[in-house]
Image 1: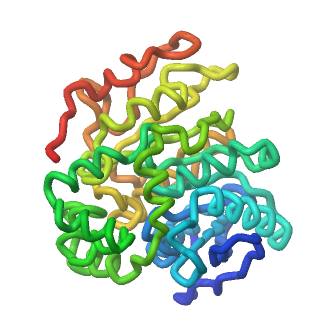
Image 2: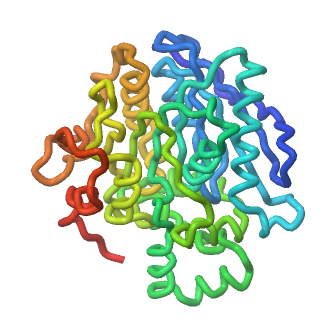
Amino acid sequence: MSEDPSSTPPSPIPVDAGTRLSVTYSFHPSMDPSVSDKIVVVHHGILHTREHFLDFIKALNAEGFHVAMIDQQSQYAPYRERIGLGCYATGMAAACRQIEEEQGKSIGGFVYHSMGAAIGEKMQARRENEELRSPTVFMTPIPVLGSWPIFLRFLVSRPLDLFQAISKKSVLSLADREADVKKLFLDGEATEDVVKECRNYLTHSPFYAFLQLTFRFLGFFLFRHNQQRNMLVTSDTDHIFASWEYCLTRWRYLLRKKRDDGREWLTVKKMRGGHDIFLAHPKETAVLVASFLCDAWGIPKPSNVARFDKPHSGPPNGPPNSGYPIPRGPTRPSLQDAVSPFKDKTRES
């Protein structure tokens, strides 16, 4: 499949979302949309921008997918530290509708990273956005139980830095140094160029949104299943979210439950690369996303999926990179069932 020969990404298009955030989207068409004419919408995570995703988007284009990247930024917003996830969800819904109207194509799937997952969940949970529910890929997302474990790890390992971040209301200050960026967002395999690229594009995120994510378990917003097939992609080398932190996420997204068509509600995959797997390994991540979306849409997978070099050995006693062997289960699994695939996968803080 061919990809856009132009090295210049499309210009961002403003979205009038009626929020304090600066909301834009950019449309990245595939030069050979041989898979589907649907649009895959991507949303970034905390501190991230569109620029972090450009290589991943090019790789998705090469797989035959049109991509729309939604970018919501707060650095120039009034009272920016008081902006919460509700503003992001409103902006995302407005951007999605504008994308479909202006591009003349329907949205067929979503790819959410980190905080983007919580934003997307909140957006799709609103009844007025039911038509925006589509198969979704969650890349190292904010766990349903919240991000308090990494908060505690900071409290133990970097108490002064955490106190400074709280006093300044600056989440970005926790990633000032390249060594911190590499540990938080990448892993030991990351090259110096990738670390610098990641650090150079990091930007402000609202402190109130950070608190909502940290203490999500207190019920800042209710969870509602999107009634779509979903894929959860995590990384053993992710310093921000350990595998065990997704136990409630796997349970809520109906691990071990079959749909009426016999397929699983939730597909679970693992990759190397750390928190920003799409930045560390854009082509591998794109092939994994492409394979899942084709399966969710019920269409043939791209012919070049076979080139995918499986990056992870898979779960204990499970086949490599095949997700978790999930037999037909009860209506909803027990929480212990959801935890069990990871019960021997501990991690250091």
